[in-house]
Image 1 (tube, one colour):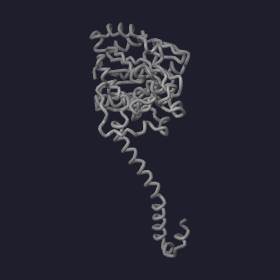
Image 2 (tube, rainbow, N blue to C red):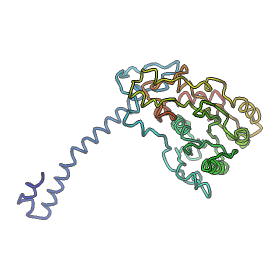
Image 3 (tube, rainbow, N blue to C red):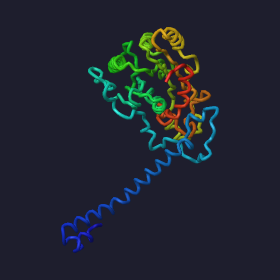
Image 4 (spheres, rainbow, N blue to C red):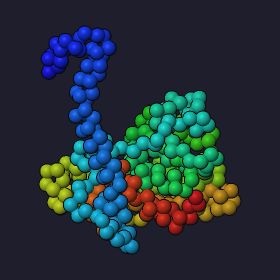
Length: 339
């Protein structure tokens, strides 16, 4: 395309002219791509600005929720199909300074330790566990920021935090041991972990070793958020809705039966709360359950508040997790969590 220009006598007469022509060709060639990129960025910023109005997610489950006056009823659900598989949660930066893994901790925690840094001297909350807790932790990121806390996240796929149990998975045992060393050293003001586990066969049990882990953490003065496990879907909601549509009942399975019952760690939590009190310098165990936000009225609807709920059979989308922050904040306070 640039051959006539290269053959232009004026362009080749002087070196600076050749350079000027080359630069002009480059600018002309890049202009369409740059314009398209700017258009996409503008679209993204507009979508982000409208997200509260058009994609409220879990906020619609609040009895006091009112539709935004500028909401677009034809707005597409978020995340879009193109971005759904990338909607994973991560902290903003790698852990540094005193919050960085040290010594033997680095073997398993270096790559996964992320931080959303609060103000200097801010209290620290650590979310530690598997990728299912990782996705839920989207609800904690903005919440911690608003409250002036630093949030550290440490996750390993398939590995819950079970430092007082020996599992048949050596990698998980190493992760829990290193995470325990990290928590002992950092002494955070709060720790978030799963205390129950729902398996693929539909059985919910207390996470191994919790009868030791919970009271030990509370005894240090740490506030422990005891998270009940989330549902596992019998179908991939995204694939189901792509094939059959979001309204098809096959894509909206019921909440698993065990999660409709009293949580299996209820007595353990109650006993640990009684033992924690003021006796242990403010440490306490705060139960947290959000399954009614994921599966309202015990039906696991694939889209809530124009936000896609599940990334796959086992994980929330980060987008939906973030929309739970108001409800999660309220529930933590109701259960006695102190920011």
